[in-house]
Image (cartoon, rainbow, N blue to C red; front, side, top):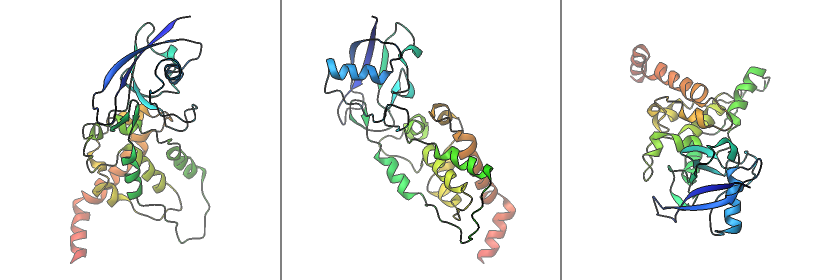
Length: 246
C-alpha cells in the first residue's frame, strides 16, 4: 500500500510562521486529507490540533490551506492532489493561530453581531414568488467555513488589525437579508460606512473558493456596490440630498 507524505505546519499561539513537520501515513481508496491527519493523530502525534465536526462538508469547521489552496480538509480527496508529491497543510493565514491547524475566527462573529438584523415589514401579505425564494436560498447555503475571508487580500494582509471591512461572508449574509421579500431594512449605509464593501475590487477569489458554489461576487457584492454608486455618487441625487437637508 502506498504512503502519503504530509508536511504539516505546526505551531502554538503567537507562532506566526510555526514549523513544518513531515509525516508518512498509509493511503487507502477514497481517502481525504482529514483521514490522513487522523492517522497522524492516532499513530504519531496525538497532540496535533485540527478542528473538525461533521466530516460531510456542511459544518465549515475543517478549513485549511492545502498545497496553497483554500479548501476543506474533509472534501479534499488524496487522489485529487498531485501523485508522488508531498501534501502541504497549513492553517488559514488570515486568522491568528491557536494551535497547529486551529485558528481564531472569533473576529467574524464580532462582525456578525454588528450587521443589522432582519426586520419584518408591517404588511400582513406574506405571499412570495419562487424567484424570491431561490435568491434567498443561495445566500443561506453558506456554511461559515470562512475560506472566502481567508482568501480575501483586504483581510489577509491586515491580520493583526482588521480594517473597516466585513468581508465576503457578511456581504453574503447582508444580501440574504436584503433579498428576503419581507425584510424592511435598508443596509446600504452600513455596507458603505461600516462594512467597507467599496474596498472590494471584485477579483472573484471568494467565489472561486466557496465550497457551496455561492456566486458571491456576482450576487452578493456587485449588486449592492451598484446601488451604492447610484445612491451616493449620482450628482443629481447628491444635490437633492443637500437641498433636503436645508
